[in-house]
Image 1: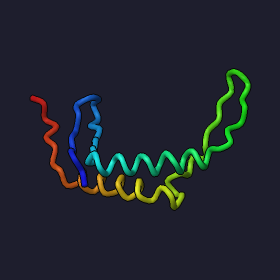
Image 2 (image 1 turned 60 degrees about the vertical axis):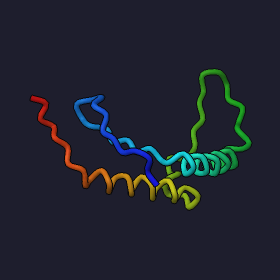
Image 3 (image 1 turned 90 degrees about the vertical axis):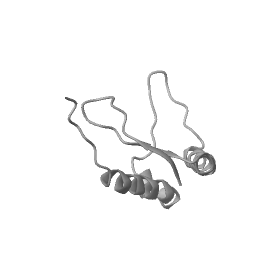
Image 4 (image 1 turned 180 degrees about the vertical axis):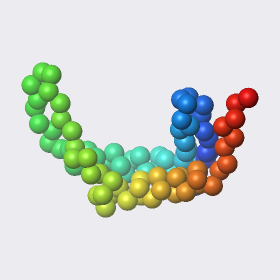
Length: 88
């Protein structure tokens, strides 16, 4: 399922990244985009300087369960990897 698992040395705190296989990512992105567009239509007309956001609970919405499972799976995989933080 995962194409790559890495720990880029970007900040003092490691940031785990997980790349999905292209066929998994493409299908998932298409489904997510369709769901997000359906949830946000019609978009309200906003005055200049205003912004609009969705409710911050998308991770609890059943349509996004696949993303939550992937994040949890990536987290479990990251928890099993030993990282040597000694840079000396």
